[in-house]
Length: 117
Length: 115
Image 1 (cartoon, one colour):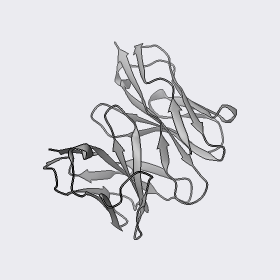
Image 2 (tube, chains in turn yellow, cyan):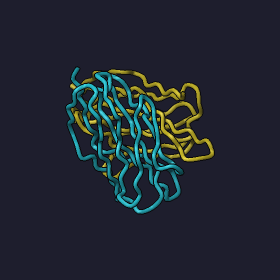
Image 3 (cartoon, chains in turn orange, yellow):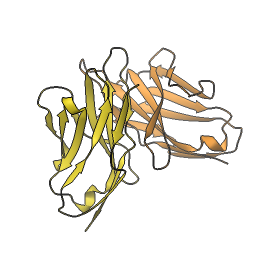
């Protein structure tokens, strides 16, 4: 099946610093990549959708200047948490969507756990 | 706005018991429906999906789900659970109004199966 990787798997940073998380589709071209945030014991909340070569579309309530998303190629999308604060600590998950001519199915990465001190 | 509700947040079963997890969605148009599973410490994996056709879909590991359009439901079932089914289960809906397709997830149901 299609594989999505994320790097790093875990990151600890100081408050005020920026953190970049990479999401790669390893064996397919992801025309669309999605970024989610998973709170403890809660579901995934979609943060934004990015299409290769265009600006990301953010969900309501998600600060686009704080969560910068770049989708420079069909296999790589990055999420940068700028000026991170402790409330940004969370589990961030990306997924890649395979456009196969029919309804899409998303393939999820293993997630990145961010802890802001 | 589209939403997905999962009725049970926490389910505890003994091995060999039957399982049914409820999922209802709110969207009047065409939808794709999914059940994902997240085993402890692992990433989300697709259990099964419904796009069209037979409303009873079979997935991996003996799971199945039935799409009942009139009830806006897509309940997950397994006749006999195993300890290894202990995981969190998420129902998700993908509305198809055109444009990009995104998944709306339910809050999840945490299943614990005791030997």
